[in-house]
Length: 129
Image 1 (cartoon, one colour):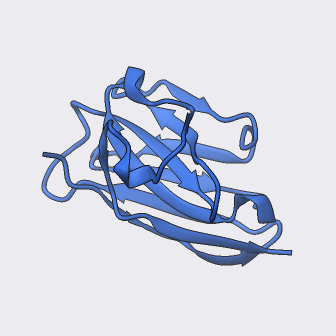
Image 2 (image 1 turned 30 degrees about the vertical axis):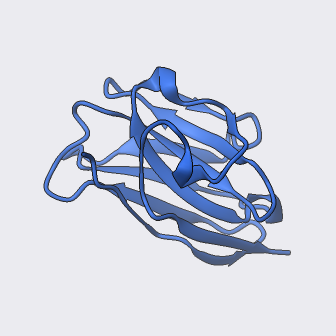
């Protein structure tokens, strides 16, 4: 079982930046692909970005050019650098570990209850106008 811990959320104004971290204590991400999802209140679980164990990245159109996903050098942490934040980015952000093929673009239920991946507990991001 893979244990994931997210951190780095907070409250910022429009145009601000945050860096989210997804760590796996005592292990590395050598054998897993990682995705960041988000879920705003009343909305679907939405894929934001993913990175394979080889370092290939993908982004939702809504965050392209603003968000960057990357590994820490030790490959035990995945970062999501979020710049030029907008109120529409307000959500709980989750990281998930699985094979890249498992990461659907949208899931109708609660992110952590998805039938794929190992999930963290989520971190709240709030962007005010």
